[in-house]
Length: 303
Image 1 (cartoon, helix red, strand yellow):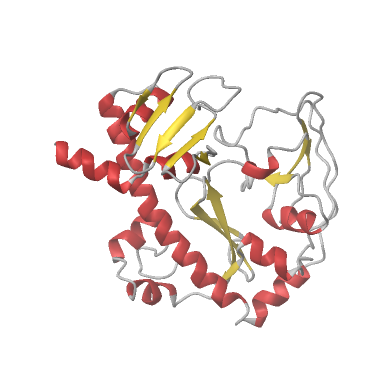
Image 2 (image 1 turned 120 degrees about the vertical axis):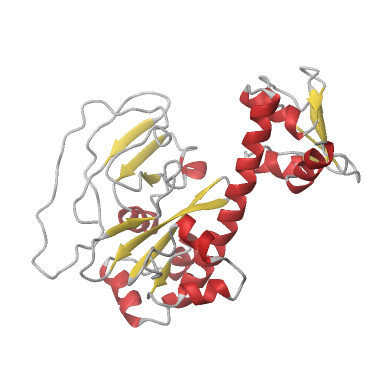
């Protein structure tokens, strides 16, 4: 049991675990020690120390200290056994995230090899190559992902479990522009927008996570909430970096950031002619809630 615990803590370094949860620490002199604000209590001056070599922490403010498991117990208010289960789940998610990261890289390589994908992006009003790279956009032509991932040793069972391959053995994404969805620095899902006649939207059968890019967008005093990722991309391209979206038709409990709009009013532009895709573009501001953070909601159909 003790050996299993030590292996678990070695596989999840305490400093890395904290940094994924947005803890920022400064190195103390030349030592493998870092100091920052304490995530366990309201802190105004750095008092939380992390020893990266020993995998231990101690706060001089609240006098709490210990290893990774103890930190999870305190921060998540869990028992010892519940903390172990939480960390084991974190390891499983990390393995799946590594697979999704490799899949994302593969789709990114495909994007500029298929003129149909590049033309689709241009028709949607997305032309800035730097933004396309920043968002990590890719293209899934279909039919070649399973072979590519098998070359890296990924089992068919794992590909089925993550939803990248369907039960007929075919790629889940086919002729789709791919947006990777991140949370705490990890790819947690992939959104695919069809460029053909298939159903427009597809996500892997797993959590969508929080609002898109909320780590950066949440710092703004006012936020524009749109329905589709292409809408978000074009608004970012226009300089409106305070834009986010829910990646779907409704907000989940995880996505709701605590700034609820009041009395939203629907407003939709006319549909495009048959056979034409609607360029993403400016959105109506539909609702505004005064307060520390304002939420501006926009909605379009067919994105």
